[in-house]
Image (cartoon, rainbow, N blue to C red; front, side, top):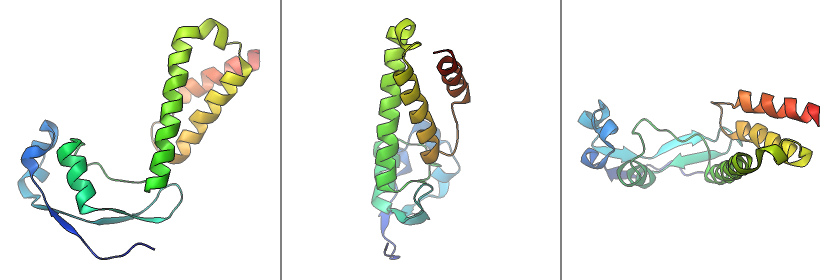
Length: 139
């Protein structure tokens, strides 16, 4: 269970990304406060802490309107899936003639795309999934 106490961290909008500095938020954001949310994937209670927000917006320069939807465990798993998808993209770029006939590779890639959608509720790669399904029907 997540504690409902609120931590606070001072905000320094001058350290945000250029785009975020041009936002309305730059004028009125003076501090970060813990944001409690429910993980989109596993439904566990989670917190985007004030300190995490400070690091995310001021060091990593993420857009100020970014919000967390995944708990830490689901976020790590989502990133692992993204890395594996990137590896598949690289292999495909280098070995397309061979891999388009490799049923195991095509299935694994399709499964990763479908698994990723369980963690990211937007931007499904429908075109790539359709391509893989078509290639699978041909092998």
